[in-house]
Image (cartoon, rainbow, N blue to C red; front, side, top):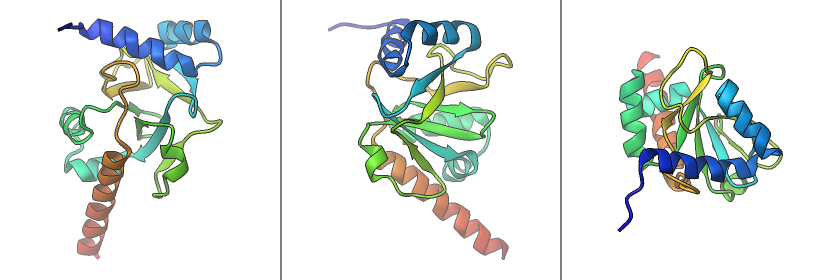
Length: 168
């Protein structure tokens, strides 16, 4: 049995993610200097953009650490990062997700969409960077199950609708 360190898994995930970069060397440089590299969705993954309010409703909390714990369990360890500027979570899923996804107000980013993806080493908020991994990638091609992401979104939407009905 082989045991891989967290750094080995991060390096493997980074090598796999960089496949989606138009220029691998530039992506690595962007991660080193800016903490964020522009990657093309639809090359090796689809990113599902989920507004924070939906995730927080599903989790029943908005505290960053509690949400991270919830997502690690709910997504069964599948990778997810948070982008501060868009106030959205991005769950990385298989390529096929983009063809089947239709769950507004979320969006499956595939095809020609270019997305700023944080370096695999950024796993907590840092004022220098606008995004961080809430649930880090566990290795190359370790993605979220599309059905689990759908369940999470549907749960959050249902709980938001119930709250809106109670408040009305």
